[in-house]
Length: 239
Image 1 (tube, rainbow, N blue to C red):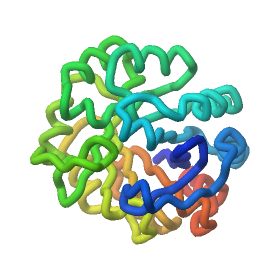
Image 2 (image 1 turned 30 degrees about the horizontal axis):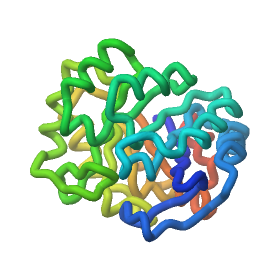
Image 3 (image 1 turned 90 degrees about the vertical axis):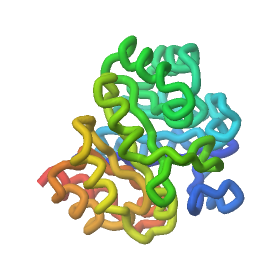
């Protein structure tokens, strides 16, 4: 299982939100590229990036910070937030992103996901953010009636590289991930599933790994707070 340390970008800074609320942001640093370099130095295989402003605006907002990160590190990075058309997807991949994450558009324009996954094999992931089993969009501000598993299954034949599943009520709360829901989703689809939201300790990571079906886990606040030692976690997952 791959551990993806997270850098959430708001106004050019590294932050973490509580339950996805923009007004509940904790700033962890004002040099995202330096933070990414620290993650790389610790031995991570990937870096997970989120343009929080972009998720609300519907277009990239923290592009300068993302570009600075890409120029600083050699490990692959994936980015979500405000990527809602083919031109933006192409632009980011041209700039060196290894993978784009499509969230809101996966609900509102699934054909775009299919088109992008076909055009860029292995470089398009779907971000499914859920509150009580239902998908939320537009930076988690809008709740839909779409069920998580139904949305995931609809992309089963599309060739997407991964599904990043976030339980919003666990995100940033340091209360542990929703292992049961994540495992159920991973068992319901053939697409690799990456867990996000509430991954706050080494036992959390081990529990996710030991399901045997979860491909990756994203953690942010726990690493910044020191609750999860990145070097130790990476070593444990490789053991």
